[in-house]
Image 1 (tube, rainbow, N blue to C red):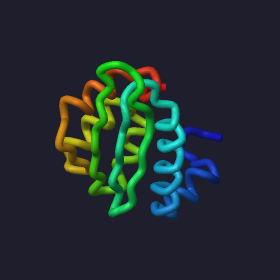
Image 2: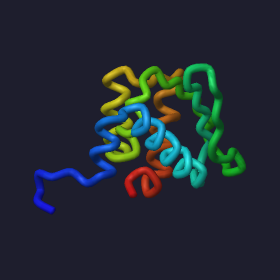
Image 3: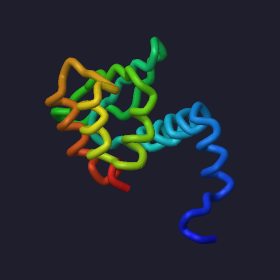
Image 4: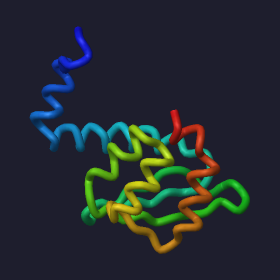
Amino acid sequence: MNRHSKSTEEHEMAQSPGLFLSWSKRTLFEMFNDLRFGRLMIDNCGQHYSFGNTQAENSPTVNVVVHNQRFYPDVLFKGSLGAAESYMKGYWTTDNLTGVVRLIVANIDLLNR
């Protein structure tokens, strides 16, 4: 396969952005299930999700509101940099940005796989 041809999967995802975003969200949520430090609460269009735990000392609980589904592939494929970029694009907001940064730093190995 040359570098300009797309795999079947890439072609299908390009044709169906909704499927790609859904897959990205599902895959990222699977990763979030492995959070070792802190609790991440996500509000996605009124649907609420919770990841991690609060058993560790000084473990923050942070709330994130997702405004644009492109947040999911940004974080999935770019890790902590994608989280920062998608925040600057307005794809998500929080009432505790410092807590989100602490959570990201504490779980950096998970996000930057």
